[in-house]
Every structure is written in structure tokens, then in C-alpha cells.
Length: 128
Image 1: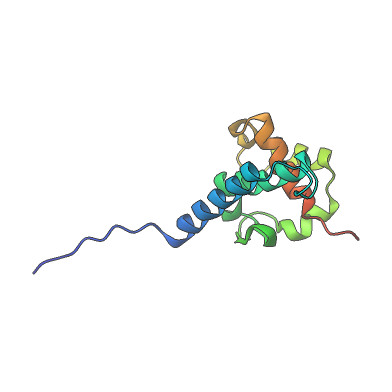
Image 2: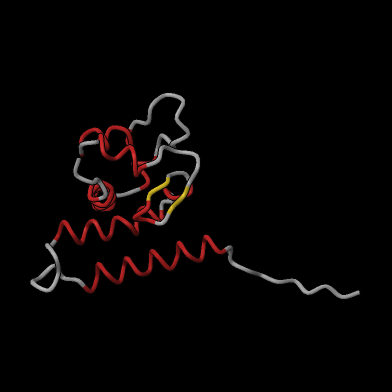
């Protein structure tokens, strides 16, 4: 009896890699000039999707803009509405006691990545 061993990348990992690659292309090709829609903040928000994907945020959090359906953490489509930049920074850098969010999450990114992630997340809030 012969067995064929197949090596496959899980679909979710492949989709995450594709999303990250797309976001990087968007950021590096959109100089934020007149053809872009707003310059550095927009580029950072686009780069924030790549950070969200690379950091695995979607495996825990639901966020429509990222196509994520994570069942563990808070639903960001609902929770982001009540956050300011300051409150979101605090939650990410110092998760509440008992939270499954890693306590060193903020240390896993440099300042530019963290700012891009925050810009991306805050851009997802809908006006009330």
C-alpha cells in the first residue's frame, strides 16, 4: 500500500498572506498624492490592515473590514464604536484582567505599525 503525502497551506493562512501582500502593495504604490484619497493617514490605515492580518488579530476578533470572524475576542464591529484613540491604545497595551489578549501585544510592533493598526481600526467606526 502506498501513501501520498501532501503538503498544503491551510486556506486561512493562504488568505491572510494574500491580504497582507495586497495591503503592502496598496501602501507602497499609493503615495498619498492627488490620486490617493488623503495622504499619510490613509496609507497608514491601509497598512494597518496588513498589521492586523500579520499579527493574527482576525483569529480572535470579528471585523468585517478585515474579513475576519474570530470567535474569541470582542466583536470589533460593535466595540470600536465606543473607543477613542486613547482608550483603544490602553486596551491593546494593557488588556483587562482575565482577557485572553496577550499582555505583550503592543511590544510585538514598532510605533509605526502600532499607529497604522490604530488608524485602521479607528477608521472602521461608523458615525452614530
